[in-house]
Length: 79
Image 1 (spheres, rainbow, N blue to C red):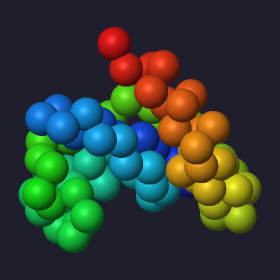
Image 2 (tube, rainbow, N blue to C red; image 1 turned 90 degrees about the horizontal axis):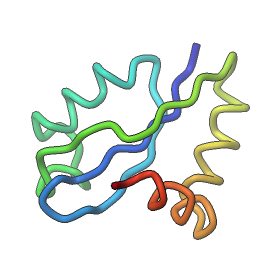
Image 3 (cartoon, helix red, strand yellow; image 1 turned 180 degrees about the vertical axis):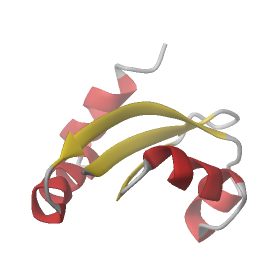
């Protein structure tokens, strides 16, 4: 299974969307500073995960969630 995830920067409320085989493992990498974009906005928490059978369909959904409409959807999930 491929996971498309959205994480929220606790200090800045920035949303980052990505995909991985394990969103929990990838979150640890983000919080340990292993991603250039997310390094300066730590800590992060997962706000949304979706599961897909293959990388191709996961990539389509990831691209949607990174779009303006997708970001608006994700912002509504943040309390």
